[in-house]
Length: 501
Image 1 (cartoon, rainbow, N blue to C red):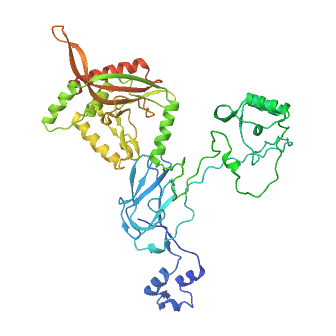
Image 2 (spheres, helix red, strand yellow):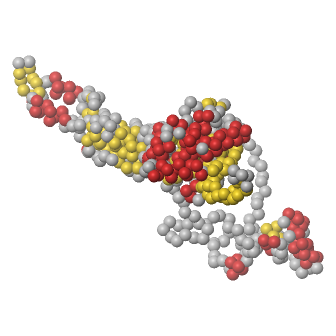
């Protein structure tokens, strides 16, 4: 590693180096060519100064995925003062998709960890560590002051509006302590204002404590008979807060509604109506954003079909005898890939302006993890065998749950499959993963009695193992007719596993 060196222009240093008179105190000796600096004194003096030093290598928060805006430092794999080589793992960074290992790009010594492990929401380009060249004093490295995240985009200054004439606004009447508060119906409010009466002089008999028109008319009759006098509430002078009277504590509407939600106190038992805030990871924030965009911008259409798994289950049992373990979901992935190869019009995406047919068949498989739903990709699934697909799904699912997926293992894909059959779900609909155009939701296979005919035409009940699949499709590129034909071909391929070979 080549380090850039800087030599300060202090006059004293120049006099020492060129051998001006008066420099014997730092170890100058006289030779044939005049005064020169002895090697030992020069080395000790030169390294005791701050004029010669190497620029540290800055470790910045990298962009590890196209949609990443900030990252979390999960764990540092090297300690301060520890030597590192190019390619060594420095730390683990949590992106918006997975936990990725950040490797060193140069040799040297990890001099300073600027951002401690566990720190969250570190913006791209922020300084997280420093590396110095071997032999340098790593304990006294200085943190550059000119390195930091890019400044936020400042809004253009808006011109101040010209002063406008003041408009008198009627002051809203405030509730006077010691009086009852009622929810007035519009008719009751008009009657009370017309006759200068207050609702606190009467009783609310309406549903949910509403002061109705009849209650207001009853007050008018009492006023006409002289049983009550005209009353208009007047603002009371400000007074020091006192203990509430019994009337204040007991009076009120039948169904009180809090003006503000209750607030919980950290470290204290939760109050009634409070909640506990759960911090969201980068992965969950991105998933929430993409799902919202998908449902609000993509016109979803749905088509459902039942498939008979009798032949698939028989083939699976034969493979188990040969010690080949595959799942029903592996057959479904293969059947979807073969169907996409037969119908390339479905293997498309929407790029914002129009459909785009994809030259590859990569199946994204939804995997549930503690941090959210991830979709690792089975590359070129149509060309893979059932056992190869099974091995890929197992390996990628484990990496997804461990947070070790690489960006190329989850970015892209042309078609998605989400299977909730192992959770006992019969059928459901899934949200499309843009820019993909389709996602197949798979339920559990279940025994169903169906009425069939034998070779002689006699009707009989026969048990079948059926599975329900629902395809969500982007109507802009895959209309209902095309989606129906796709499900028909998919069903034929799945019910005849020999086609998947």
